[in-house]
Length: 372
Image (cartoon, rainbow, N blue to C red; front, top):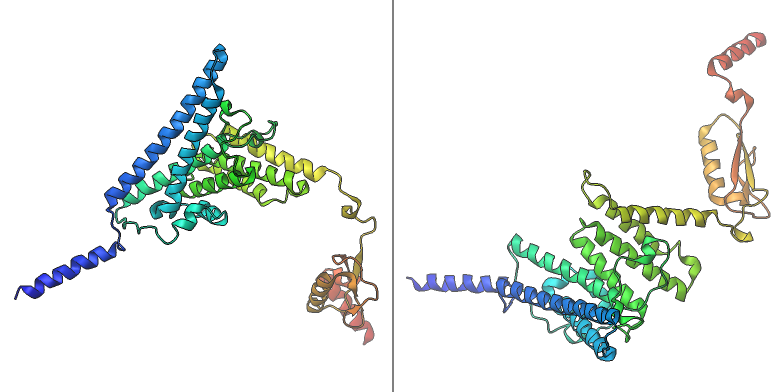
């Protein structure tokens, strides 16, 4: 009598295991692995900055040192930290869930880990606790922010500093590297795209830090400058990265609670961005963009006191421009020579229509009396 009951319990346990999507790892083990990987990455980044400080101190004291070996150590440590961060994003599905923009950039770049682990990644355990989900989000957020900082601080040199906050940036380059870059195998635009994608994902996880929004705006400005210098400098104001800068600065302004003062750097960056746009609007344009001396006009004479007829005429003329002209005795007819397609419309009404209704009624009564 107890055999069917034991079989049912076994089915329930197997169903519970299958509910974890066939994962061979427990939730606690997965969180411990993610935490250990993040700590290893931070140790590498800490070693990177310690080595940088030692090299700067030796230069200040004038002590002889082997810069070649020190630079080699810096590059190896920075590449190891980057590899650890990228491996977590590309191979761990718990982290990948929170990094859609960055993962898509890796897919577009045909990253080797994306190709090799696309169909071989183990299924993650199911996170049923809100505390576990919050821990994964925090670890993903920290990985994204540190990954972006690592790319920008060890990357190529930017343009000379300018007067604006966005041009100068927030993340400073490692001084000991000088003109060297730890990512010589990839272009500067690729590095900046990855850094910007990581900050976009981080802003979705936690948008309460104004410094994160400022970093996002600075990264968008750097990528915009790189693209403009390499392709078309005239498209800076119309660039989508320009709109991203405005969005990031506006979000950084509202990130803090109302009772706290706004971030000074963000407020200054917003003022500088608005001033740039105002200066761009006030500048002189080429002749084809100048306003015509004699703007084209279309005159509509209202044939009778009917607002429905006037509305249809106005809509059609505004839609088809000066290709058409109004005929007071019939519908709108086409003109022979088309001109500019968005004319100024002038409406001429009968003088009797502008009289007050009471006065117009008295006039009609008077005319009716005289006629009789």
